[in-house]
Image (tube, rainbow, N blue to C red; front, side, top):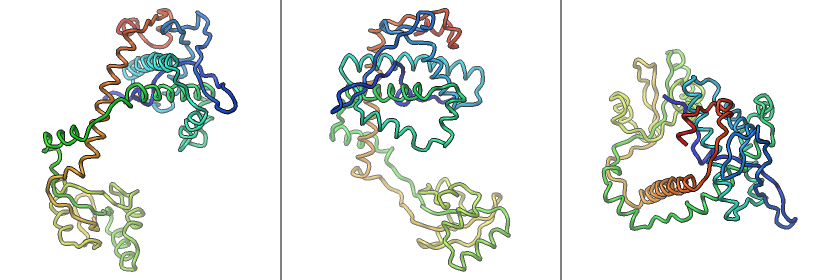
Length: 329
């Protein structure tokens, strides 16, 4: 299976960034960089893209994907090449339309990007040879590209209540809901561990905490909570054990080839149709996303048709893109 890559929404493509504006309304705009001819890999509508643009993209990708095959690497480089060019087209379109980022949007972009990153993130960037400025430029390029797509594509999609309801009635089989059970599950492989769990339960210990501590089964980090599980996906023995319980009750230990199980029933959900009022929000969101994606593909294809892209073929081997790849562009 090929390696997954970010789509345009998380990795749309390149230009240089300049912070400027008056003190009352600071803004961020894009300015084409000065790139020497011998460092220019490709020009997009006359604007040069440098080897550094592609190198930064590749090095940032390496942070997320350490071990890849040679075949996967070629596909990755081909995709990154497309991403860098596409992002430049989007930032050019933003500049043509006068769309810019406010200072607030810039600050939010950096704050969101730094949430949850490891403490050694800046060290990792340095080891990979990516400067903080290059990382920030890429983030702002992506944010501006998303902003122009939101204004020119997404905001123009309006799924009506009638379209939403028509989809529901013409796709009823999608909204048939089988019987399901919501429970917590604890699995241990040794009888001694089960004895410890049972002793703790008799002392009033919480099932959720015990599952988080002892269980070796799926959902351990959620205290054994597996959400709603269709009963036809469960072994008959599990269903039988759960059927004997009232909400909140805990089953007797059940042993099978996986080990020793305990279940705590939360609730049952009967077979039946999902009513339209419950399905409406999801249908609307799905139809909106589908139409936005469709319109984006058409809109982006039109940008590409109008664009003039010239590749420095001598630089193609340096960025890992073959001449055959370039001819397909």
